[in-house]
Length: 299
Image (tube, rainbow, N blue to C red):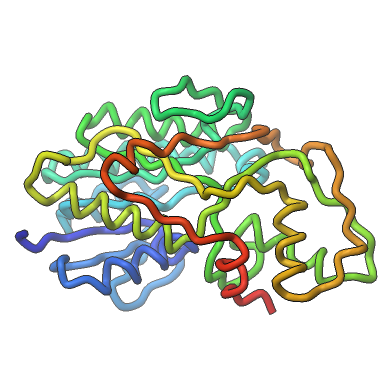
């Protein structure tokens, strides 16, 4: 295989760091470039993707063979507070990146979400009808549409809630639950309602890497269109906290599970996704939640 260039947006984020580590550890890529909004460093270029001129320039200057577009406003509650700013990143910037990438002959691998579904009729196949319940899901679905409009050869990867080697607890919706568990002196309620299938970022990074390799390698199984992945374990927030308590040997008596939706932006009930399109390519990675959570720097 001729060595190629891969660019990763959102490279300083939770998933982005895992992607940079995975791609940089391989000798198959001539160049691995990451973009970040506020940070710069080795193989990391500072760029504001909501500045659409900057977004276009970063593609035209570097001409990546594959662009892994992981940058997004991904917190539904923040999205609800400032939907226009978030759409500028999740939709407008995505469109400009896809257009520019088409001009230089590259392909996009767009990171999307299980929140494109309403959670009422799982498991969802890749061609199931989306029906997002909140602004975040709407913006990511609109991002999918502009990616596909630019080229049917682009790849969309829908993923669930992520966890991994966080730099701060608010970086993952899962680790935000930990302080309430640790503070055993304050009774708290935890939603035992919505079902999620969390994935470790290293698993997603491996999936993205495998798909990206296949995008540039000659062969019959060149990926295109929509793929989906989620963890194998159905867990509510209460289940996740219960697992954390077991792994870290923390008292759990002050936490009460409640069969009520989480507060804030509306969330789908069960976004379990069918993963067979990836499995047909022999791509499958799952870290058990208790094994993955024990490696996290929760303090």
